Image (cartoon, rainbow, N blue to C red; front, top):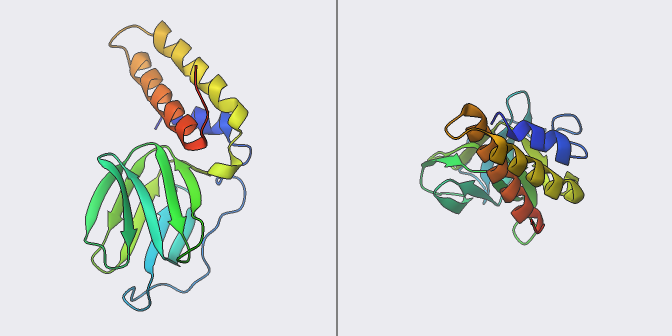
Length: 174
């Protein structure tokens, strides 16, 4: 998303883009059907967060609704909305959470799920105090833009991403 990039630059204290990339060093998963895990590929345009990573489950913020994927899930293709991707590495563990600005997810019949997003930041790396400022600036841009203009559409996207970010972090917006 064009406008969401500004949100991540302002809100992320350290982003996945510039700090530790969490790509798995596990060998390529030729057969995801062995074991109790699904295989996750989670990618940004310039880097992989996880590649061929065995995980217990992943919860995906689909445009049609949030949904969970485990091993042997039926194949599905989904557009992602701004929201939180939750990765459970082992059953019973707390999920690792990433805020994404949108993207696509493809779950294949062989228990492999590919998630491709434009931007992602670990939820814990986002500066909670910046979110209301980002929302206020986005609303200012939205209200100032001419109806039907490109600027109005971009500002609307920024407002929606800021709202989703606030909701993911439990931040009240005024």
